Image 1 (cartoon, one colour):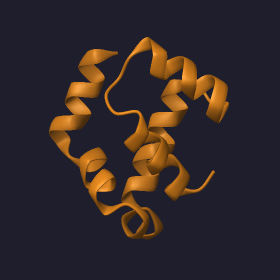
Image 2: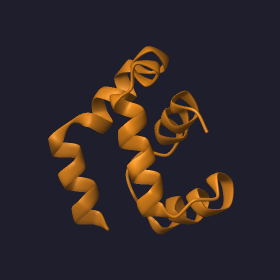
Image 3: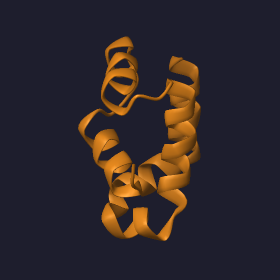
Length: 72
């Protein structure tokens, strides 16, 4: 899955919930921890920044990372 696809999924599913975890498993066919790894890599990539700079910046912000970690 491409950085653009990962960032589009994140933009359509902001925040963190059990529903989002189920969608990650069902739609993306990866575990939630793996999704977060791929999402962070996508947000740091040039392709990701070009595809969706707003979502990429939100994903990369330290405050957002801390909030997501606290919600899990």
